[in-house]
Amino acid sequence: MIGFNLGMAGCHRPRGGAPAPAPADPYLPALSAQPLGIFAVRAISGGYSGPLMRVRRVSDDAEMDLFATTGSAQPDWAALQDWAGASDISVTTLYDQSGNGNHAVQDIAGRQPMLVSAKARGGIQPITHNGSQWLSLPSGLSGNGRDVTAIAVQNRMSIGSAGGQNQAQWMLGAAWNTAGSLSFLSTIPQGLRLLTSSTFKDTGKLSRSQPEVIAVSSGSSEMAMYRDGLVSTHGLNNSGTFVGGLIGRGGASYNWWGDTFFHAVYDAALDDEELAGIRAALIPAFGIIPLEDTSLPLLISPGNSIVQGTGASYGQNNLWFTEELLTAPIHIVNCAVFGQTAATAYNSRSVYMNQFDADRPTCIMVVPEPTNDISSGATGVDCWNNYVKPFIDEAVAAGFKVLVPTIIKRSGFDSTQNGYKTDFNNLARAYCDEADIFLVDYAADDAALTLPDGTHPNSTSYAIMAGRQAAAVTAALAA
Image (cartoon, rainbow, N blue to C red; front, side, top):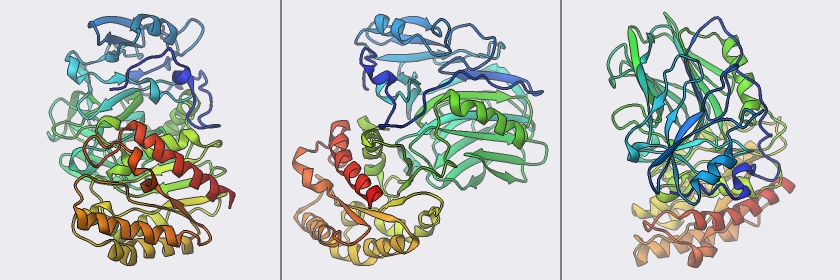
């Protein structure tokens, strides 16, 4: 875990040269629906003056309440830095800003989410979950399961078990998969996934590398899933009551790898206008760049867990560092899947090709590289001819500028597989003189890359890879 170390300016450093707007101080709009709980890493509920969170100094288990700075909605990071020193910091409590006292807590040290200074965006410091860290909502937070809304600002990061398909950022209810008492939201590469009484429903927006507003509104006859202004309704309901719940976990093995900025639960099914009003306040409050801002370029990155980041470098992958190196903001959509092959990505290519938007100044596609195909026995030449080259051709035809990465080293490759890797990389290097096709030669830095598990780079190595990717993105934007 990366130490808090707030003494460096990084905690207040936006990611990218001209990235997330500086956070403003709007508060949630007043609604007829009553909030059951409001949790945030900054003051967001008008009239609330209590602590924002309770934190634990890992070095000696001392705890303190963190308040907003006088005259500001932002936490007093200077006071926390003085108190924390060089120690890692975990979060034991996110206080309920609704006034209901339904605080989100975690008493078990090993399950407490962390404050990671490198995750700060424009002065906003989220709490970070690594797949085994979550906060529990109390039994006092309860309501009619038919009429409830949960809304959050979250940032999906790296993936873990189950191929990243069932990562649940939250759940309502005390018992997992109990009819009428559970509603959880999972962000997957293709969109959102909701489970109620064992029923899955998806809605289609790809996962972004930036924070986003997501919500589920459950009424008497349907549920509406809300993301980046897109609404998808389904004729089902979560009948009955719920009691308590979790932030950062969906029950059983439905865990969360990512960041939480804000979470709220209301006692009614909010309509589209009400959800849009809340989102309008959350965007400036948390420095969110709305995906519908088509003045910005778009980068789509299918791929595998090397694109996503995993293990000790979760949430700090080559895309994360690429965004930081660019001199202007860009929407980065990270839709990689744990274990995905280039063959699978090619067979699902319409999902990615359909993201081309002619209203944007530039759309960039990062072609998936076939390390997992070669690991499963495919040759580099076959991968190039059957999947990667056709993917490139279709992306160019759709209007994308294309980035073609080479395959990095992998300790599990035998001499034959290393030969296949070399064959593929040579084909990629030879082809990228074409117009609108740009090489990202990760393999050129193989000697400098450290792979703790033999496959996935550590954070330092991802930063090296990001230098090459940022250069290719810059070239694509200028072409």
